[in-house]
Image (cartoon, rainbow, N blue to C red):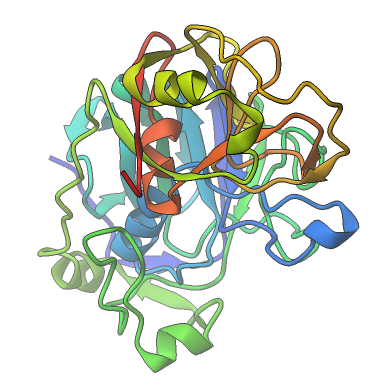
Length: 333
């Protein structure tokens, strides 16, 4: 049973003892810069980040840690409130298991451990106040492709935590799809203003009922796909193959894209294609096989895009480890 001090000095630091295979700082990314070559980046599983922030009382825009495949060990230097969502990783505080998808009080000096993922790929560890690394172009996200934002989290890093406190929120929390349902206040405020101290007992009482039911991470997800814009560059047989085949996620997948293995897709048009704009969810078809672009995708590409995965289904691809069989369903069929 954890013993939690009742008063917290807000400004604090999270020391990383182990960053695991890949841990990065992520928020909602950098929208609106693609025209000058800056990708959006941000959390690969945005609904999971939204749930984690809502649980600890953060604004939806707060930054958290995206923990890939587990392996994170961290210690706060002050009492904090945390929540873990997304990939199903065992979470413990000083060796005591604590619930997934719930607000949890952590005493100063206690060891937070996120173990290997049992299902899914990316877990989100939110801390009340948010991870307050220096923003770049309005975002604290690490972009692994362009190198924007903070470096990946490494052993020994000391991450500053925001001065915004956790207190019962006006935010109604995420809806069924993970989108924040915000009040006017939550929409106005990017970071809450602290009163200087935080009553952890009050926080625990306020959040006692704040535990979310996480969506199932299916072993064989089905992703809805909007056709085009280059669907007609492929033969009708190739288009049919795309939607009747199970596509296996390969080990070469990362935050840039899920690389898929399956039968070749024959082209009806063999011309070269000038580079054109890309969006998250684009299914680009180079000769090596389909690439489903995720959070750190490039802003342009020169291979034809046969379809675009619906934004509401992108989190399923972000949580699919290598070996997972994805199925695609054409939305207008």
